[in-house]
Image (tube, rainbow over the protein chains, first blue to last red):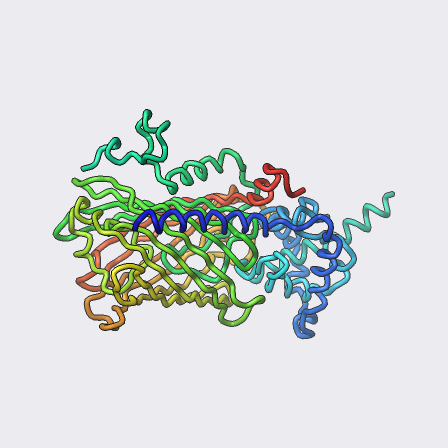
Length: 149
Length: 316
């Protein structure tokens, strides 16, 4: 009776585990389509969320703290320079840089669960705003780099 | 007492010569999974909750594997104190699904150290975005012996006296159980509130449904992150308290003959992907162990899924 239950249950779990690994991978061929669909989530933020200002906008440490948080929690998917990684799209793209801080905060809080991005409300609200400060600062970095060229 | 040769399976004659055929599938999985830290170096930091028994609604990040070791010391009246141990391998299959394997064991002082079984757990996030209360469905299959003492959940009429029996007797009994929990959790202003009602159904023996609960509240010691990478910054510490206990079974639902615990909890999330947890627990009635001391060490391996996929020729 015991092995009757043990082996099928263990094999089932292994199958589930393997399926999970497979599901964690995104398909190369549909990457552009995937990224477009993730960017589209930014447009779904409710008006109230979109209009929320970043309370840490004038905090001189916010960008540096956000960069640290980004490295710890986001770089794995979005790349060390936020220009896109294995699972997450570039955060330097116009689709991200042109939205309001409030819309970015909303996506960070709610995630894009069906498309692989977890909710990040586990990070306290000030830390999410610090991340928003860092992400928004990337457009300035981009402009500076373009200007130098 | 069985010897290895008595237990040898006829299906592995080559190994029989080495006297190692007694390794079950869970043991082989444990050995393979124990190699993970060597094969997959960690790349990002963990941000874990401090709870030992209660679950919040946050799942493992997709593609990440968290390897966790936990231990509980418990005082035992009319018997020997014991330390239980369990290993958890928690994998984020998707952003809405986390799957987990547990391997349990225990050491009872002046008695013995034994492996007590395994658990397969899945958690499914039911709503796609954040709400005031976020529900997660928890489904677990357990195959453990009655000597299992990890007390990962307290259910039915679990009481201290159950653990006073010698291991040799306890390990004769086996439990095959299906456990369901509804994890309800909310985070507001840095505070997390979580409540987990649970129901367990033994799959053999026609025993009734058993019920229990766990609940907790926790908060990081600082809400803003500092600009420097640091180990001792307050934002890396999460403190709280949890309470858990049994609620009887279907024929006798309620608080009589049940045990309950109150336990402060503390987690220290290190930037190097390690998390340390500590929790002294106190029994709240005469059916409870008077004192529990739980501690845990875990490490998160980001990108485990994609690394594994690459090893087998897939992924990017």
